[in-house]
Amino acid sequence: MDFSFNDEQKLLIETIRAMGEREDFKQLAADIDARAEFPHHLLKKYADMDLLGMTLSPEYGGGGAPAINAILAIEELAKFSPMIAAPVFESNVGAVRVIDLFGTEEQKRAIIPGVCRGELSVSVCMTEPEAGSDLTSLKTHVVEDGDDLILNGQKIFISGGGEASHYLVYTRFGDIMGYKGIGGIIVERDMPGFSFGKQEEFMGLRGMPSCELIFEDVRVPRKNVVLEAGEFSKLMLTFDIERCGNAAMCLGVAGGALEEAKAYAMQRRAFGRPICEFQAIQFMIVDMAMKLEAARLLVYRAASGAGQGLPSVYEASLAKCFANEMVVEVTNAAMQVFGGYGYSRDFPVERMMRDAKAWGVAGGTVQMLRITLASFLFGRRFDQRPGK
Ligand SMILES: Cc1cc2nc3c(=O)[nH]c(=O)nc-3n(C[C@H](O)[C@H](O)[C@H](O)COP(=O)(O)OP(=O)(O)OC[C@H]3O[C@@H](n4cnc5c(N)ncnc54)[C@H](O)[C@@H]3O)c2cc1C
Image 1 (cartoon, rainbow, N blue to C red):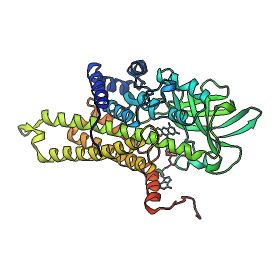
Image 2: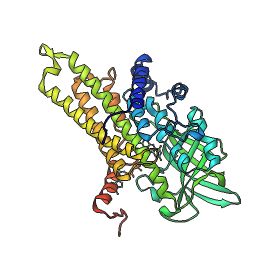
Image 3: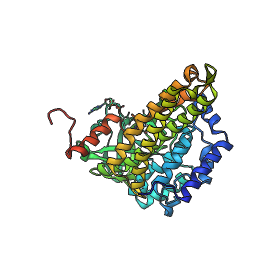
């Protein structure tokens, strides 16, 4: 077992830290939140640094790096803000990975090089108004029409919605019920019949495009099928790498909050001394570090186990669930260390707290992850539907 970073990983972390300092990413994070504007200008910069698609296949312009490298980059960037990390997340652990792993040659050539250059992006489209955790009840469906599929349905909460060039849509094929009828197809932004609903107003992750997708008789060529009906389990397996990315966002946000809280505790004075000299504050900081380090080990283990492929479902679920709860606890404690200023928008920890809350819902709730984990621990599946 080796817990150390290799030279390439150390250089990656140092390069990102130096960029963050040089380009004042702390201020950028505050500006993104205040204006709720996605930092598009970072795409070109990240592409030039080979951060986009660093884990994707080299034949199509990717870097061929192991998943753990992307996880380290996401964590480092998310210390400033998840929005600053978002392009690296999307291009390495997002839906484009499904295309990289399971797409056709034509799909890979059409999409992956553009993702690596920061010109294209792919959103994952699963959730519907009445199918979130209960994903296998989704109603969006396609019917065959010659060489095409006709798509109808609706998706909600789609990150990148309205801005992404491509959408990996989880859809039912015909009227096959349950998970056996679900596969994945690529829908392009300008396809007739495809439109976007209102942009979501979330409490955190301000600046992240997110909206409803509406499909009205969208004609999708058959060549856009990535996974056929019956290949739902492959779709979900690939999603576990996205879960590691989600957990890395939590490591970053918590790490940023811990740094802010430590710095503040050393300069804020009460009763004639810096508050870091009070044991209550020391213990809060120590507990934050302890929880963060424990989450880090789980996330790194899951991502390292993935290599160039996919992580274990058990390890990824454990890591995401723990990291999702850890980041809420750590950012909450950071606000407390800041006292009244923690509640003020003049300081970053309240933003970090707002951003922290998203991850335990996005990518599968902590409750649903526990159901998956219980299946592993008991060695049997627990069907959630009544009467089973
Ligand atoms: C910031 C953000 C980004 C997102 N991005 C995307 C995206 O890009 N693409 C996408 O497809 N979706 C996205 N989502 C949607 C997300 O995946 C869903 O919100 C999530 O899966 C939960 O579904 P739901 O909101 O319908 O909640 P529900 O499924 O209605 O759940 C409500 C509550 O009931 C609990 N619950 C439900 N069933 C059970 C059960 N059997 N046992 C115990 N508890 C249960 C849940 O844990 C939750 O607490 C995003 C959401 C957020 C907040």
